Image 1 (cartoon, rainbow, N blue to C red):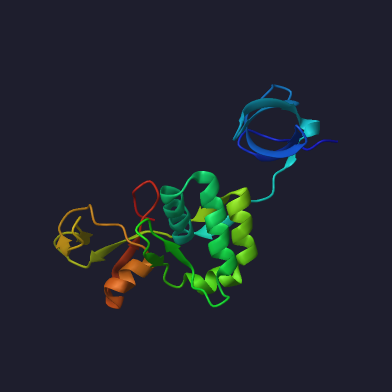
Image 2 (tube, rainbow, N blue to C red):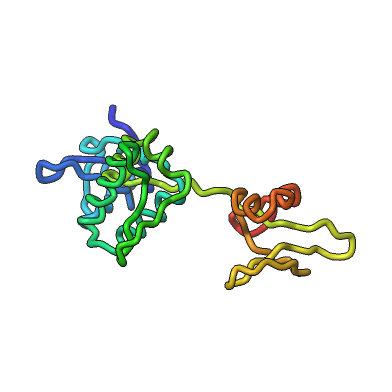
Length: 196
C-alpha cells in the first residue's frame, strides 16, 4: 500500500538520477497522480514514485537574517558556500560573523555558541532548506483606567507612549532590552492582529 499524499506535502523523488524535493501543488481525484512544484519547475508524478521529504530544520530568526545578508552581498550559489564556511569555522577560535560588503564584520550576538552546538543541523538547513522559528510578538500596554496606552517605537528608534490601539509589536528580548520592568505589561499579539 502506498502512502497518501495531499496538497502542500513536501515530497522527494528521483528525477534524472538526482534526488528532487518539491511540494504537491495539486492531486488527481483518485489521489494517484500529483503535480509537484520544485526549484526546476513543475512535474507530474505517481504516488508510488514519491516519498516524504525530510523535515525542514527549524532555525532562529537571526540565522535567517544572516543568510539573507550573505545572499544580498553574494551570488546565490556562492552565498551557500560562504555560509557553510562560516558555520564550519565557528567554535574553532572563530566567532560566527558575516563579512559585510565594505569588509567589516557583523557579529550576531549570542550566535557563536548556538552555531557550535547545532552545526550539523545548520549545515542541513543551508543545503536542504529550513523554516524560521518565529518569536511571539507582544505589545506593551500601560495600565490606565481611562484609555489604552501603548509603547510605540518610531522610525528613528525613539520610544513613546501613545493613546491608540496601534502599539509597536516587540519580541520578548526587545522588550527586556528596553527595560526589564516593561515585560510585566506585555500583551501577546495574535498573528491576525488581535490579542490572545
